Image 1 (cartoon, rainbow, N blue to C red):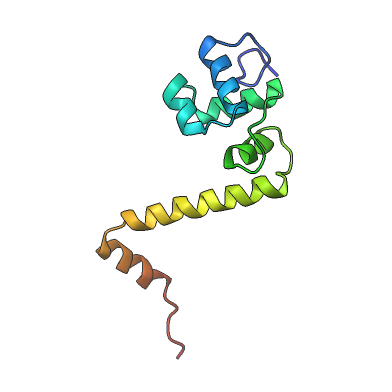
Image 2 (image 1 turned 60 degrees about the vertical axis):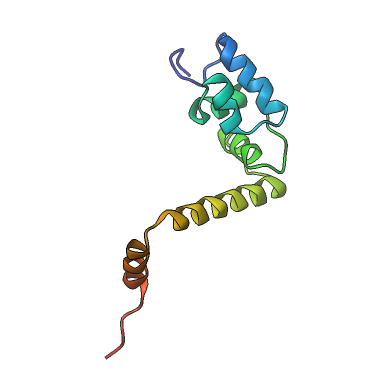
Length: 113
């Protein structure tokens, strides 16, 4: 790894150290970003390099597995699937009725001739 790489072992800033501690203590990535300004793009690779993991059975735990380039455990995988389903449901609720109708029409199979 190069020294410019975000995942290279280097001295942590105060915000990054606090972010890793909060991750280990079970705070969500959104809360960690609000409190420290450290994004998920930086947080999870840093956690992997420094051997910090979020609690198992959480979506952030699954993201820690992914950043460490390992298969998520069953509990973390389930939590990530649930989080993705919630995100898709939120997205569906934000579609206007017209956009939803267009999307459904585009997915409808055509009649066979």
